[in-house]
Length: 431
Ligand code: S3P
Image 1 (cartoon, rainbow, N blue to C red):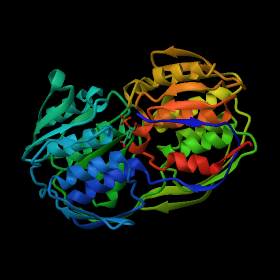
Image 2: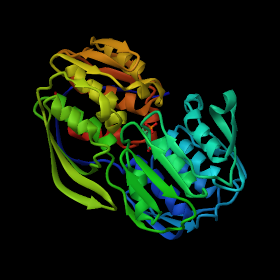
Image 3: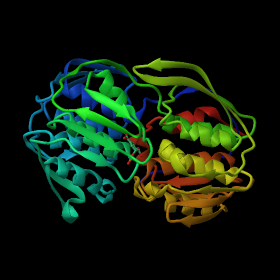
């Protein structure tokens, strides 16, 4: 279990590129694997989570070659996957396990999916229950609610499912199963979660209709291989956006970031707090909006964050909370109960860590109140094995009154292996 000690910085400046989007990278492998023809993927994120997806599809007979720049996936068509000879290990990746469980539900073979100690604690009923309604037979620990899950798929029928939570993993899992189901599969959600699956299904030629807060997929339609270019991950950029906002004398340009509106809640929130953030050179790449993001140090103010912006910023709350810790006044976060079932319980993990740095935080069931301060103390904080907690606390260290040591940082490799070298590059240290 490694740790890092980070010094305060005098500014965060320069120009950077963040690695490829994790969600889009997962989906490019999955759709490429079941399409006809060779899909190429540029900008693929080679983090541990995406490698779990890649290994799972290789284990089902898919040829995937990485030439160091581009990933080449030889698609096997909708019905060409092979029964894996062993358990599919999804590591720490919730997206891998939940999406693949939907896909495997449509296969006429037997498979078992599992993950690491954290993933095996995360709720799977949210996909198992609707997939079972479609006709999949899925067994697992705790009555099929926890991994490992054993899946006997095939013969699915489309359903009309109203998801109780806004979750792209639930939606995408059912959409993938829907590709194999008889008739139409419709998924609706309380408010729109990230829509990368919808966009990529359309790119690959799936029969798909989008409607208010939902999507309908028709089964039995073959997909066609594509050339996919993955933009930089806004979830990774978020740590650097907050770093530049809270550190004085900063000006940072982050090039080539995905700015899909279902992901830009973090920008809306930080701008509402007074953050000086500009989107430049807006363009479209492989069906996804992309921009360069220019950030300057700003005086932030506390705000209330709730409602439909929450799913649009769900992975960015660890970073947003660090901004809130430095803002003037109180930031109130509500409607964010989903944070309790991420890689760790992020509400408790953030609250505990910020308190160690001298910040007043009150937890509620679905959020927290953070009273900002100009003074963040140094100290020792723990990631709880969660990559985004580790990175957000490392950003907090840039403005602390003395060094902060973050323990258990190996998890950062799941989504952002180059995070620490990049932080080192842009954070100018005082002498
Ligand atoms: C993801 C969806 C989100 C997000 C996760 C990636 C995806 O999870 O937190 O990091 O790629 O579909 P939920 O669907 O559980 O909100």
